Image 1 (cartoon, rainbow, N blue to C red):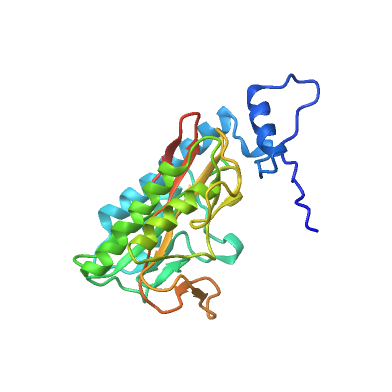
Image 2: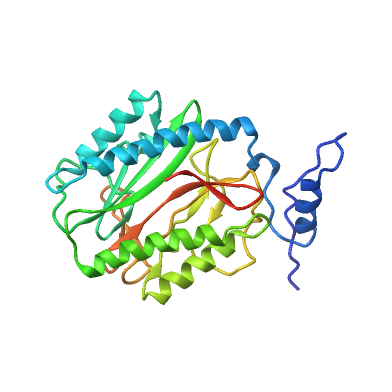
Length: 286
């Protein structure tokens, strides 16, 4: 017989009266749902810090959008990101993170994510590239990525980029206060598969703010009503990685970072950092 153990993440503060929030979260916890711990609910001061970090993070992507073009190397993108970030008193979160050697991830065509910028990688007309930027300002983290089409590309790649952006929007609309992380993944998976694409399963969105990666894991596939309860005050990313072919991926053995589609068909990704509010998601960095 299999008994489901409830993980009691939500604890009442001793000597404090029970709040409406406590009652709501405990209701779900007592029903056997996975709920956040109290530390995942950001304070007003923490949210303000994450907001400031997010402004720099979005500014970085705006600069890349202005400068990116055919003939430039992905190393030049890295230099732009590093220069803008440090000139705004911030730190690029990827730099030296678990040994990652650069300030940004640049993932071209069949690279899903974690592509390492290089002098030897020159952007060509028709390429699609994901630029993934993460920023630390005064100890607060923010994270977002955008797709860029270099010049004119094929209708197939153009559609992949567009549908992936739609997946992010649909996932955002599915995220409701006191809904579940699984609601997001379910909505994204349905839209991707309806368009003939697959959703990467080995990588996911995540909580962010006080650390680079926090709970919850935000999968971009799955069933409604599963995963962690979404509570106002939580900050997390939604970042669907959508493949033209199979969802399966491999990691480049030479660098230990670059994630590539198994069939080497193109992949696209868009990512925002969100704050869950009483009424739904607010975009912090995009």
